[in-house]
Length: 94
Image (cartoon, rainbow, N blue to C red; front, top):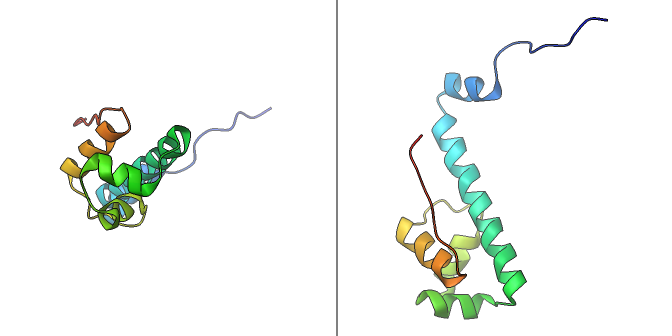
């Protein structure tokens, strides 16, 4: 029986060749963070208004943070959101 192997390049290689790897990766990370925050809010029984108060920000700013499509979120906002749900924001360059 013939063993199946990889054919062609990886998806990451494709994205790099197209010049969109960084953009796609950043968007994916933002979506993951938004989903994690939403899940933590649900687990802790927090409403958007409650979390906005904990973060000392507006509900509109929180809506932007929780919108997986909105990429205009600062590191400060992400850090405050993490702290408001009892977590730490961890980032690294690899």
